[in-house]
Length: 154
Image 1 (cartoon, rainbow, N blue to C red):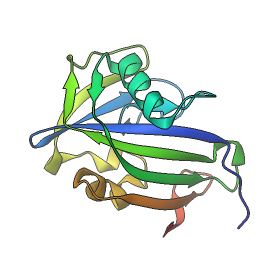
Image 2 (spheres, rainbow, N blue to C red):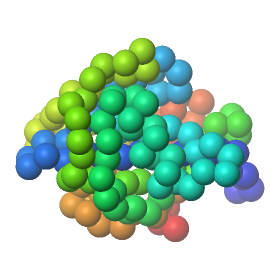
Image 3 (tube, rainbow, N blue to C red):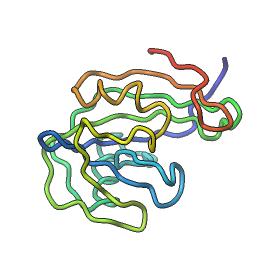
């Protein structure tokens, strides 16, 4: 299958003991789904600088020493403008209290109670590994309804 990555993205998972911080997207791509805070990498910006900026903008928290866990490529054969590579970060160090913004509403979840049914269809395949600090390098292909057609390790 031929595809082109159109956008670089990032996600950062903040972990505090047995809890992980997720955000409910209130608008834009992923609206109505729980996810980690993050966003687009701007031109000339590294994925690391971008994830630090995005988390601060979205929830008002300064991440410290985020660990890059790899990346995931998301491919939409029927909507190739959505194709992106998303760099995954995890941190247990951060400053500030997560605060709701126009973009999203943050909420802490016990890791055992992650709401997979209200997240992207792919999350259940890689999220447990990422939360365990394992490197993630995967590619997911989606259909017109944002359901997984197939997935593969990279």
